[in-house]
Image (cartoon, rainbow, N blue to C red; front, side):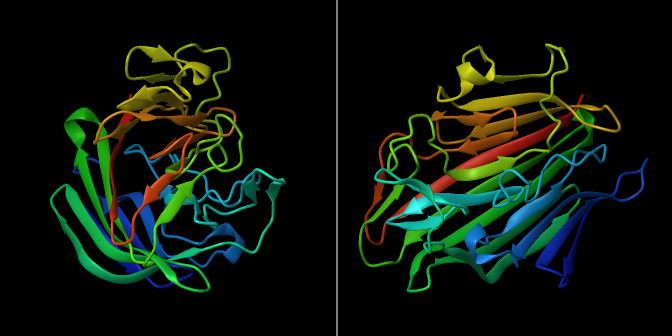
Length: 291
């Protein structure tokens, strides 16, 4: 049984729990819908912790190498000069620098907050704002489903970002804007627990992808409809498979192994131009399976 619990402590949040017949109530995830993080981290709603059914934490929040990585969250590296990713901004003329260019995402209202049986739905409106204006009004739908027969649960993330700025917006990344080939990170971001892909000479701990691809160097930048991490957690030594699937067709995956990171880039080497009034639609599914 899925249950939802609103919390108004540090950062307003929704805790999603799972209750099965043979174990105590286990926290699947916590979704912070009103972030209290610093402005230079581009505060936004995020999932953390996000756990396996076995109770192992799979996400990392504010890691010391990139404190602006917030578990599982939606971020746009740059939108016409505004940083909605967090951290320093990369520009072609002078590289990475800290700049006063950070935007933030603001929870506006819930459209649905429900749980029934082994599923739950969280749907809300989010505005992407700069100190001067609102660039996007987003309708975000998050669906959680547990399947104990396969020892797995899934998170279906759908976002519709409407450009409400009144002008065309250029959405880019350090590759398209800064000239850093391969640095095409943007979109839905999953920052994994640090040891997930530490292979300790075990070849079964690996990254694979659509089309029979294997290994970080091969998968990174390759086009495909899905990517998987075959991983292991600390403390319990449990094995887990994380599957990242884009439901609208192939995309060019961004993946890092030594600081586990996966993103669903909606653009890569060229800016994505979003006309005034147009909508950027994202549709992804993440599945976490205990092995």
